[in-house]
Image (cartoon, rainbow, N blue to C red; front, side, top):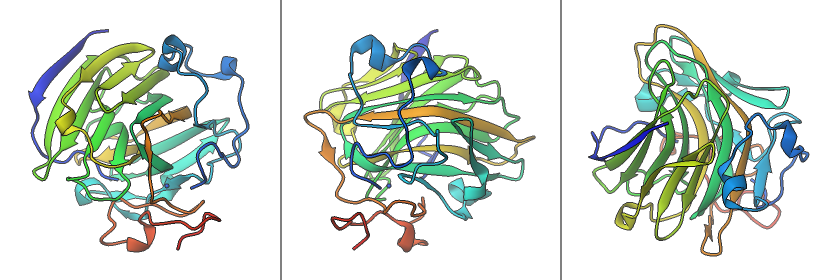
Length: 286
C-alpha cells in the first residue's frame, strides 16, 4: 500500500448529501468481533475502545440510517432512490444502474470532531460511478459547512482511494490518495480532532493534515453513497458490513437531526421537509 498527498484540487463538487441519541441503536444487536468481514481495524490497532454508536445491519436497515430521495442525483445527474438500498445477511448494499439510478444514506445524529470506521467493499465499475464514505454538514450549508470525502473511489478497478477535504465559500479542496484493493472487505476510518485529521485503511494511516483552517466549522454526519457522474458503461454496487462512531472529549454533538425513519436529502432547498431539524425530547421533530 502506498499513499500520496497533493495540494488544492479542482473545486468541482464531487458529492452531496440523521435519529436516536448517541449509543442507542434500534434494531441493532451486538455482533461478536469475529463475525466481522474486516479482520484489521484502526480501532483495534490504536485502542479506541467501545464506540459510542454501532450499526451491524443484522435486523435490516436501522432507523438512524436515512435513505436519500427519491430526488435528482449528484450534480442533478441520475436519480437517488431508497429502492437502491437493501440489507441481507447483515450487510447493507447500495446498487447503481448505468442510467444513474442509485442511492445514498446518512447516519444521524452527527458531531464535530470524533472517529468513524466502516467495513466496506466496492464492486468494480465501468465508468461514471464513484463509491464514497463521507462527512456532510448537518446544517446542509455546503460549501461553507465543508465536506470530508474520507473514502472516494473513482477508479473502475477500485484500486485507488482518494480523500477530498472541501472548505470555504469557493469549495476549495485539499486531497490525497492511496493504492488499495477496495474490491476486498476494507476497514476505512477517519479520526478528526481540533488539531489533526487522519485517514486509515485496515489500521494503516495513509493521509493526515494539520491545516485546521480548512476543517469544517460545525457538526457533520456520516453518509454512504454511490455517486453518478454520467457516462457509466454498466452498473455497480458497494457494501457495508458495519459502521462505528466514537465521540471524543472535545466532540460537539449536532443540535439538528432527523427523527427515526425519516427520509434524508442532499437538496434541502427543494426538499426542506427532509432536512435535519431540531428534535424534541422524544425524538420527534419540532
